[in-house]
Amino acid sequence: MLSIIVPVLNQAEMTYDCLQAVMENTEDAEIIVIDNGSDPPFRPPFAGFNEIQVIRNEENKGFPEAVNQGIRAAKGDVIILLNNDVTVSPGTLNHLVDWLDTFDIVGPTTNYCAGMQMVQIPPYQNREELDKEVEALFESSQGEAEEVNWIIGFCMAFKKSVWKTVGDFDTTLWPCNGEEIDFCLKAKEKGFKVGIAWDIYVHHEGSVTFRDMEDAGQLEYIKICERNDKHLAEKWGADFWNRQVLDTEIGASPKPGLNLNLGSGYRPLEGFVNIDNRAEVKPDLVCDVTEGLPYPDNSVDMVRAHDFLEHIPIGKTIGVMNEIWRVLKPGGLFDSFTPSTDGRGAFQDPTHMSFWNQNSWLYYSDPEHRKLYGTIADFKLEKIEDITLDDPTIIYTHVIAKARKELIEKKTMKIDGPLRLNLGCGINKLEGFVNIDQFQDIEFQGKHTSPDLVADVTGGLPYDYDSVDEIYCGHLLEHMDWNVGQIALRYWLSLLKPGGIIGITVPNFDILAERYLADPTPLAMREMNEFYIFSYIQPSHHKYAYGESLLKAAMEEAGFIDLERLPVDDPHFYEAADWQIGYKGVKPK
Image 1 (tube, helix red, strand yellow):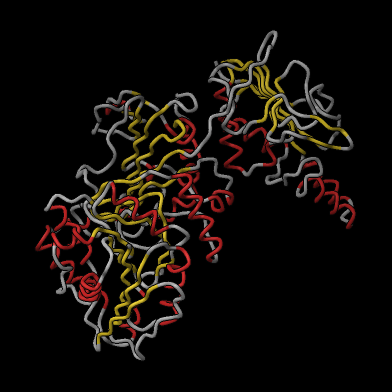
Image 2 (cartoon, one colour; image 1 turned 90 degrees about the vertical axis):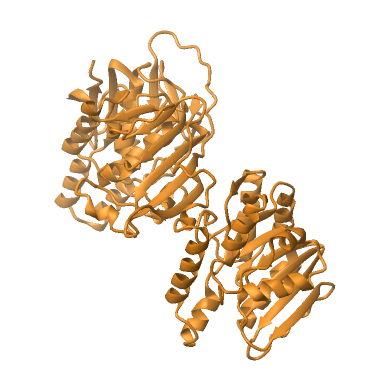
């Protein structure tokens, strides 16, 4: 049997919601509510076949003493401590208990807590959406866990026998804050193992009781935290907050295979290819990462970037993150250590050119945030935490992430002669080209067709660097914003052989604007919308307008040379029309 212990102080409605979720979603459990002086006294909800016991204290004895009371009264051999502002999903607590075969103390991940257990999952607005995301996380991460030195106690499971060996939670840490860390560290001293279950997630409102007590003038939150931190520091060392990870070395160790250390500087690491853009520091490879990494797709096992990303100019950060993701194998590890804007370190160094904090990683891990800027990079955050080293005013965000991607199966095609790619082909399939599009079934004006290859043409093509003779890209670039377009252009440049040719065509905004200004009628404005905002050819809206000079500048910036304008009746064009502009470029030899 599970004994679920829930200390409460007022907040009856929130506690009812917590208990209701527990009763609906947990099997073979008793619930013990410790009422720490609620006014009015807490009355349990209708429990049906569930067992709820309420232990009443006439005064607030604090979370640690309430926990000790609950454990003493527990009938079960497994204890789960649960904050009353936590919401659990179907099977969550039973899955957590399953991890007690591996660990002696274990906790899940959540949206709100200190340390490693705080993770980001897709957003949810209600319990139904929460349950869906929790189930998806469990299916994608089942069996993933990590041994640590301590966990946060918003939800933690352990066998009652562990408590009998370790002893009570420290009641001097009133009303709470740090008692679970102390308990875990005492357990570690006695040989018990503590773990985080990466496949389990609960929602946590966080610090609700603290805020209510502070609003009532019963305590000052900051002073309580400072007092308890001082107590724990005297007992376990001043750096106890930074020792949640077992390995005291910051960052992950090199993996078997190919590992890159970006921005290595004067600190090269064994087991890595040390990369820097300065020859004078004598790296293994001199490389400007903003121009790309000289490695094929899905070829790198680990990328380390400590004190690196903040030196990338703001306009190029997405491109660099996409490039790191591109070279990593599916599941490849990305280890980042960057000064956070939550401290002084992000701003005090005059060489820093971009600024990062934990929320920055939403744009490389959360689907909705990634859509905002068309970010290709997609990482699963295994760990994200803020830490300090010698100077407490300087905060670092440390991230361990895995590249979330699937390998594209290469399609074997018999091609006589040079390798030519027609990217974003739509219905305009070209003879002698591999016709590639993101859509399998394409229809336009009654015509139906399918491409030779369905693929992401901005970074996921099954071709090696320097292997393609010619690329044609008709009416595709305008469907990307500027940054994504530059990333795509540079990617296509990398695929071409030295001296290889690219042809790019887009609607010519110069012509369309001239036509509208010559006759600024509602009908003319509708034509502008049809051509430039709501693409009438594909179910994909236009995102960027190009004229002759901007298309040429974009291709030059990406690295193409010897640019020549294509005639409006170029044989590659779907139709001859003066409202489109095209340029041919060459990859330098």
